[in-house]
Length: 135
Image (cartoon, rainbow, N blue to C red; front, side, top):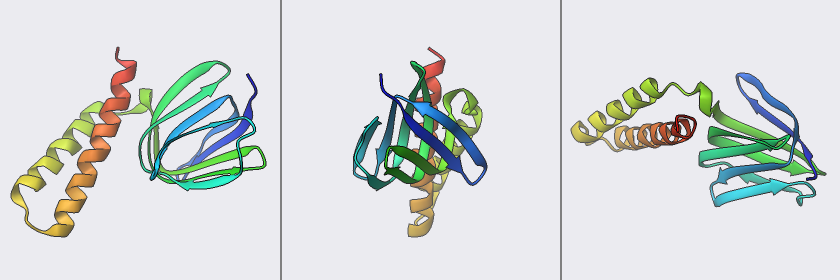
């Protein structure tokens, strides 16, 4: 299968720099798959699962926010948060979920409710991605 150059960079540094056969990410418009010879594009990232297929091996990650750029065959993913499934701290995600639920049940402040919902969604993405490696 043909491959393309993929870089995944967060504010914490370079996460991945190599060749990939496929990248699947959640954009704000829905899921998007990138393969070799994809057209040039830029997309804003949503909150969901990312899949990187490199050397025939499939790796999954939680990918939250940021941008995707495909330019002349090179793909750059710049997410706000990117965690490989095996690196996700499930206990931390569970605690974050519980804290978000607590805020939802006690607060009436719009800003606090929006933040709590975002916290819950991030925790759900992390738990879902982490559960794939526990099977």
